[in-house]
Image 1 (cartoon, rainbow, N blue to C red):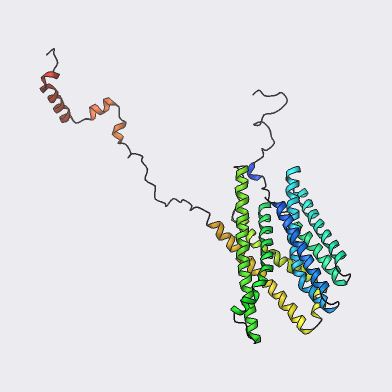
Image 2: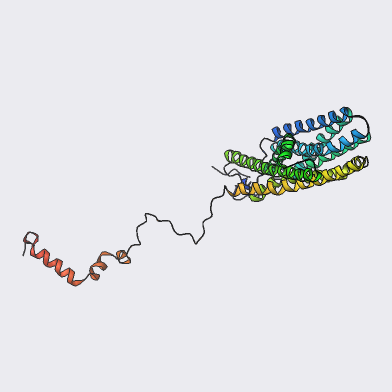
Length: 370
């Protein structure tokens, strides 16, 4: 190719070349995750509304609202992050990877989810002070979840959303197995046996939820890696901190949801605790149980994802490893490198004379001139 006038060549240009290893990887399946997360948020809002409207107005509605608030806040966090992640993929595909644009798009996605959830709560719930608390706290949780999705490692955020959504669905499904587990762990008529059984049921739920979170995070990152390599063989590979973060992400979201509940929904929790002494004890016990559950899911999920990632690594070769036998022949004798005349002079004179005598002894090989 001839060099065009007025246009510097690639070697002479001062602009740095685009390195494939520095390009951020997209989060695969972000649109599907956003739809699933929005569906789960809608299901939590609907179930909360049904529970509140089916109860008598007054103190019972306040208590049920306080009990349903953690599920709604957790679902809003995940939905805000999922929608922001899907929007970030679209913006990166259209305008490139700009940090400012990515952060603005993530905040905008979270705000859309929060605004939609707040409007739905105000239109469908009873017009009370608790309704406004639920709507405002849900909107704040969605915006915070969207801000979390502005990170540059989109596959890790996608793994966190996937694992967190699976964990929330598992916790709701696990409620059907609580009664058999209470009987299994020896719940009887005494207060002590009930407390002990409840503690073991909660630990079992947290342990299984953490295992599920770690496996889902590892599976998502593995799928994302294979898809990225299929499209671009030079795509960078995620290291172990990404797997550690993805496995611990659901637990971190649960703990973050608890912080949002205690800050934004403080007035609702105080109203529920002031109803009676039993409600105060119940709210305190539930808050402690949610914190313990988040810690268990955090550590078990992180450890599970890290162990699963470690099993995919091949052993590293060191200098102490024994060399593998190869068909390479032994090192040649340095004497073989000498030229022919040097070999002749270096040969044993006795062997040379014996060979000469053997040749002379054969009359057929004798010189005919002699």
